[in-house]
Length: 466
Image (cartoon, rainbow, N blue to C red):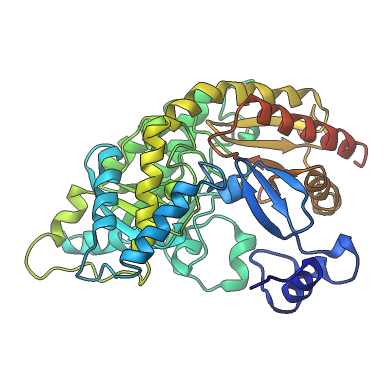
C-alpha cells in the first residue's frame, strides 16, 4: 500500500491526531509555518522529516533512543518474536523473553534488587513503585506508612499517582483533585541555591547537598515517620534542566531513609540504561536504592517497555502462601518488547556502549561548556550524555525571563530556529528556561560539534531579542 504524501499527512494530522503535551493552536492555518512536524525515518543519530530534511537527534527521541535509529538487529528481534509468540500476559504465566530479560536486568541492578516487575512504560513503573510501597508496609505491620516525599519541579509521570508525586503545579492543577499524601522538598539546583545554603559565595556544593538532603528529614519528621512510605528521587533531575546531585547528597538521603524506615525509590526512567555511563544511574552516582523505576532506554525505543526493580526484602511478603501483589498491566512484559529489550542489552555488551559513554562524556561536557561565553547562557549542567543549558536575561544577576519573554524568545524563536537549523532538542520552562540535550549514546565528537555550532548560532541571535 502506498502511504499518504506530505499534504495528505498534514491534513489527516490536523483533523484527527491528538498530539501529546502540544498546543494545537500552533498548527491552525495554512503555510509551512503551521505544519505539524512529521518525522518519517531515522538513521543512526539523524531523523528525516516528510519533506526529506535531516535533523540531528539531540534528545534521543525523548531520552529513549540509546543506540540510535535504524538498528536492523532490534527490528529483527521484534519480528522473530512476533512470529513465534506475539502476545502472552504475565498474569500467572511467563514466557522466555520476559524471564531472560528479568535475569539480565537483575544481573546489572545494584545490591539485592533482584525482582523485576515489567510495565508498559515509565509512568506505570512509578505507579507500581508507590503501590508496592504501600502494600509492603501494610503486610509488615506498618499500615500508616503511605505518604511520599519528592522534589520541587520534578516530573514523575502522568497517571494520577505519578502525577501526584510530580512537583510541577502547572501540570497538575487541571487534573486535581489528585491522590493525597505527597509532599515536596527542594531540588538540587546549585545554580539557584537559596542564600546561605551553599556557603558565603554560593558555590559550596557539599554544603548545599547536605542542606538539600536534610530537608527530606524535615519533611519526614513534619509528617510523622510512621506515615511516610517512600522518597522518590531521580539520580539527575530532569525537569528544570538537569540538576546533578551535589557531593554526599544521596549518601545522606540513604542515611535518612534508613533511620526512619522509608524506602528510597530511584526514578531512572531517563537515567538508566547508559544515560549516565552506567546501566543504572544509582550506580553511576554511588548509592543503593530500594526500588528502581525504569523504561525508555530499556529497548532503545524499538518497543514500549518499563520495569520496576525491587529488592528481595520488598518481595519477601509476597513469596509464600496466598499473598499476591494485586497489580499489573495487559502489555507489561509484552513478549515482543522484552525480546527487543534483551537484544538491546546484548548490543550494549557487544559494542561496549557504557564504556563509550564514559570515554566520551568529558568531551560532550567540554563542547557544551564552550557556550558559556554567550551572554544568554547562564549555566551548563548535567552528567554523562544528559545536559541542560539554562538561559538567562542577565548573566551577572542570573535574572531569568518573564513568562511573556519565555513565550516570545524560548518558544517563539529558540525552539523554532533550532529545529529549522537541523537540531531536534527540547526547549523547556518548567522551572527556569532551559535547552535540554540527551543525544543517542553512540554520538561522537563530530555530533557534539554540530550541536554546539547550531546552538551557538541560534542562542547568539536570541540574545538580541531580549
